[in-house]
Image (tube, rainbow, N blue to C red; front, side, top):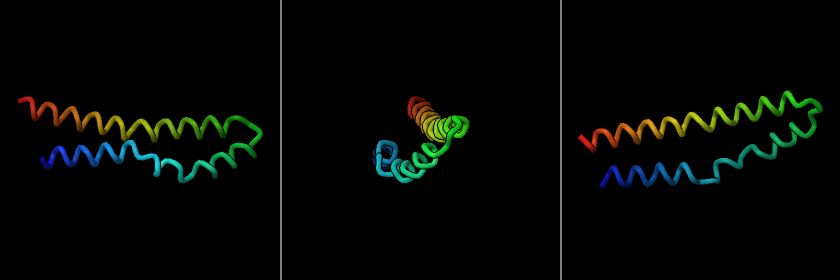
Length: 71
């Protein structure tokens, strides 16, 4: 029961779009005012790295829970 509730909270946090809109306007304003594309590429790479790490951690945690529950 506790595990199911924890997984539900984790799922809600992962799919909640409210947290992802906080800085989009500021990043867009900076990138539109920049003439070179180096800054835009750096921002895009940073977003990709920041997005990837939590999903990898959630996958690893889910896999560990699956292994414990299976054995």
